[in-house]
Length: 500
Image 1: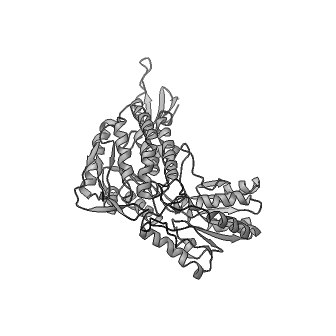
Image 2: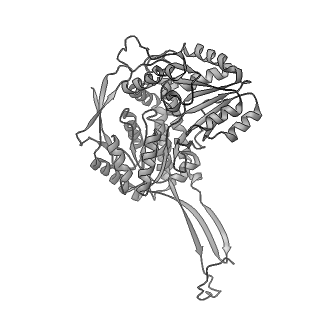
Image 3: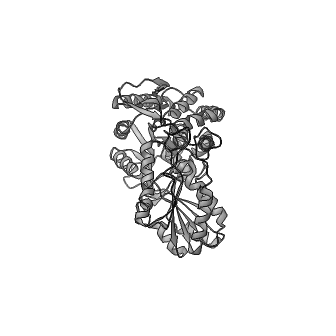
């Protein structure tokens, strides 16, 4: 163990005082490389208090001040891409190129926040009645909490705090305790950019820290990304405590492949989207629905590509896929493959015996491919969150669509076809929040919003884009009348006001 990861409160590192610690592991070796402080309720209170105190001035600061700091942060973030990616690889395990991609997507939201001046423009209607004007403005909500998952320790927090801060809120981040170091690097860069103390805070911790944030009376809003059971808990608990909530849950993302599709393109996309980041993505394609007679050929092409993927430590430039985050998660993912045949699937590839020379203690698992998977099997029903791709068969487009729409999840989906009419039908008829047409991972660009349907989202608004700005602000309407000295006041009138 070489280091200790603490909190960031009021513009500086604050040592953990609870006495509780969690291990931070290098997934490639299995070795514990650090310990992370697990915050007590009192430490969460301290972070919220710092954020509340900072809101008194930050919430009324000028847009020019906020955006100038965010522009400086954007430049520092760009200059530190490799450093941040190295932190991600060391604690999460994803390969360096994938980690760099994560930072790049986070940068998009920082750039969006730099342009917040246009997003916060109000509306004005003049002379709606005699000498009466009406203006609509948006104001920050106050202290905002962000609770983020292990799979994107840089990108997902940056889905939240840049817009929240740009809108005038202050922020308390509770990152995953499995890979916490990236959060402190982001905090240090914000401080270097000139962000006032207390505007951005980090509390490391586990469920105890989360539950305190959900019930804290000074937290006005909660943003969350994670599994569906926890998203449901976040939404229910925070809402019951009077907070606005956006809680993004789990996924089972389908890719519908029609008989006219380019099968090489579809196979490339299936392998990339299913096995990238070892499947630890909420937007991973985990179920391919092959329509008609293309199933056997498509499975063969996927298998040929999957067998060539190079597995190894994320710091090795030759590696295309790294390990899973923990041994316990690795074992859980493997259990779905081990039980697949008994539940009727054809196990085309079994990656559960994977090892990497020189890294025998790592959390390794290879690529697994299951064909003819039934919709009532565990491998299909559960979010596996690992490199396991299920292939299901459908006779027609309608049957494939019905299969997808019957899923309780509705995060992302894709269709592969050369038929524009079929693609148009699909994007209108499928029940999911994000749709790709010959695009396997339809993560929106920063100026559109990210979010799913059904059990993939709890709350009304998605993250970033226009929805993010609406979530982090409250609307206010101001009606103004300036009397004209040359006209009488009009006297007392107890009737309901009418425009005239």
